Image 1: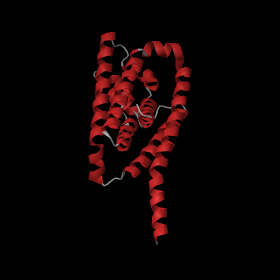
Image 2 (image 1 turned 180 degrees about the vertical axis):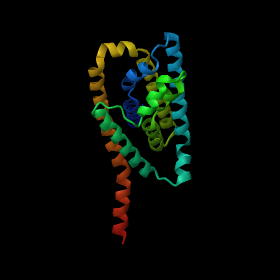
Image 3 (image 1 turned 135 degrees about the vertical axis):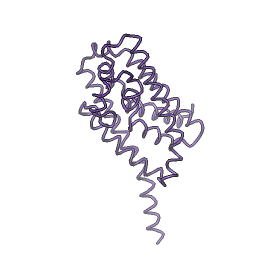
Image 4 (image 1 turned 90 degrees about the horizontal axis):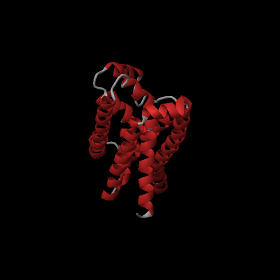
Length: 218
C-alpha cells in the first residue's frame, strides 16, 4: 500500500475508533442489558452493531447527494465536522459521555425497553452524530474507489472491535474499573480534539487561499 493510502487508512481507523470509543459505551451497555441472559445480550449486541453499520453505510453513500441537495461545500462540512469533533473531544477529556452520542433521556428510556439493540445501542450509543459526521467527512476526502474502500474497511474493523469490546464488557469493567475507563476515555478525547483541529485546518485552508487569490487579482 502506497504511503498516502496508508496515511488515509490510519486516519479513517483512528478517527472512527476515537469517536465511537467502545470502552466508554461499556458501562451503559451493561446497564441497559441488566438482567439479560448471555444469549439475549449477544443478540442485542449483534442487532446494535448491524444497525450501526447500516447507518454509517447509508450516510457514507448518500453524503454527496446531501451536499448537492443543500448546496453544502466540502470545506464547510469539514469545518462543521471539526467543530463537532472538538466538542465531543472536550467532553471526553473530562471523562464525560458526550451528549452527541446519547442524551440522559435516551439512556433512561433504553433501560426500560425490551428491544434496545437498535436504539439506543445501535444509534446513538455506537453510531451517533459524531460517527456519522466522521464517515461523511472521510468520504469527501476519499476521491478514489480505493480510498472509498478504505473508509468502509475502517467502518467494518472498528465495529468488529466494538463488538469484541462490548462482548467482554463485564470483564473489562471489573478489570479496569471506572477510573481506568476514564483514563482511556481521556486519551481518546485528546486524539479526537487533534483530529478535529486538523479537519478545521483542512477546511479553512482552501477558503483562505481563495480569499488571498481573489484579493491579489484585484
